[in-house]
Length: 212
Image 1: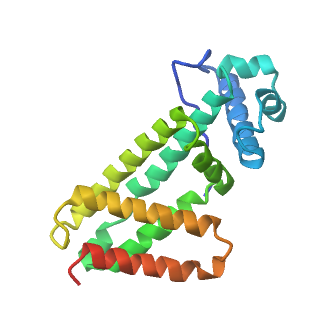
Image 2: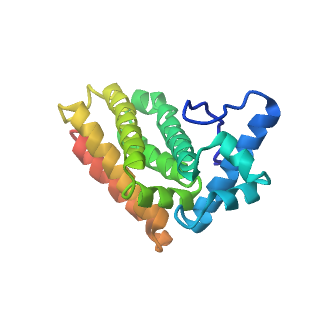
Image 3: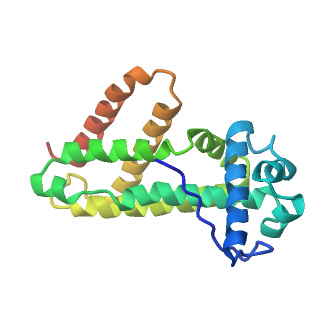
């Protein structure tokens, strides 16, 4: 799955691109930032390096972003947006109609793993920055809350078969559990065990959510 960077409008930026050439310039800066943050980390990357990688002047960089922090923030927002889109586009109807609850959970876990493999190095840097910068923490918390809402909607579709009564609390448990397992799988050196870990997580959540 490709990480397609979307040029977004933000009132904090010096310039919002209106023309195609301007949008392409901003897209190049975003792409360069994504690559360098992934390769070198946030703190070891500066605006001059990003400009050079993007093939633009440092002045052009500052026309679109006041600093590298705003660039990272925009990339962070778009990254989370794409992860959330995976949840929102989960194909659940066939599983509900057939009553294949365990298969649905296994499918959900695998789709989220697939989504997180969009630039795993950048995802790792997100995890680091989410612990060190208050602005990035806020973005992460907002995104997590939105993902939990989507998970709650998915669980609500199964409401007549659920063992648990508090769907909102269950959504937090399910989302957090899968997220932690996904992190283990992406960054683990023991890839051969991935399927076994996914199967165990599927069994755990199946027993938690459903009667049998």
